[in-house]
Length: 476
Length: 55
Image 1 (tube, each protein chain N blue to C red):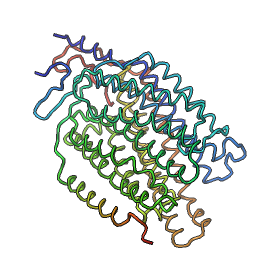
Image 2 (tube, rainbow over the protein chains, first blue to last red):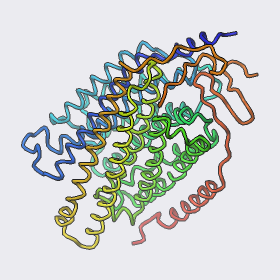
Image 3 (cartoon, chains in turn yellow, blue):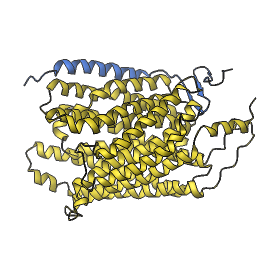
Image 4 (cartoon, chains in turn brown, cyan):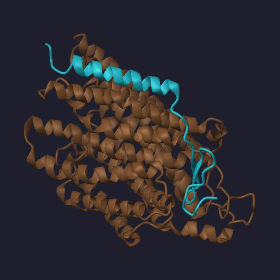
């Protein structure tokens, strides 16, 4: 027999709480920093000479900071932190080689900061989403390898017999990324000239999105959704259909960046088909998510984790449908080189995956610190500024993309198509600023939660509580 | 009674002991099966029709 307190201690022991907190708080910094660079960039659309006199703050130097900062700073740092929380709890044992993780924390954050700083200074490999200089890519690649080993060995040694779908996605995303990061940073910039390089770059950039951000993000929502909904996951079967269809179709998607290019026609067709077929995994996981919530929608009002997950799932549905149909030749002709593409990338990367890891942070930080959420008011502001600001930004970008495409397709002068965008770009800047203020308030709230939140009561020996569980923190 | 570490089965319900997550084995809804079939048919059509540029 195990007493409830002993069970609680056993459960607590599997997670290195301090490490997870460190990662999530550093992710909070990147979650504010990287989108703020995006707002600075968007101002340049309204005032073309804004910061233009300073070489390291020009568009070409700052845009990679925004893109790489969101992908590897905000999303990846949060995902690594959540990995160190989810994997031990799903396996029932501590992470393999926990001692590595402290070194990984420092190496990751210092390496990332140095790499992001090097971009405005002009060091850039010239591969979109693979822009860090080689000296920075060596530690980053090493970190992906080390975490992959930690995840794989922990999963192999797990106490739980079944492997929950989160572990499927996480394991796959780390393994895929070890190879893809090396491909994009050590092979692509140095060994493939010409059109082959472009074709392979299409694959690389979509592997970042589809074989890292997407499966890692899905791992996060599959973990926190049933917990936030306080309901069983709707279907194990659907989660496997979603995983395998994603794994089968995504590797062929990347070439859709080069429709109407010198790349062989049949490869473009395969990319278009694969892009459209992604409707299958997307609609499958959406059915699973919303099916899980059916019967307990009140959790949407009660829990910030639930709020961010559900709204992110809605953006996921919209953004992915946009991405699939965008690959069709007719839509590509209309939307390529327009802000429609930017709408799609923001809907998926920010609207979906950043919101999902944010939801994970709202769930985890109170639990690993044993403290209630510091301020519900700040959380409300975070949520609504994010939702309203982002919905406006995504709508405006989509609309202006269609408008630009239509104007150019009907023979309008390029300059006139740009002049017509002025009110939309201003709206985008204001919407982006609202999102950033929201993020700042939210991350400040999580920081204050970790430091000053009201302590949650100690474990209670009560038959009404599951054995050894702490009482649930409120609003998370 | 489940063995330690084994998901506790309750009908179609599985429980992951350490995380507290539960999952069901819900069926694939008919509308979603329809989507799978429609997308499969469209895939075959599109690949055949647009494999090469017919000008």
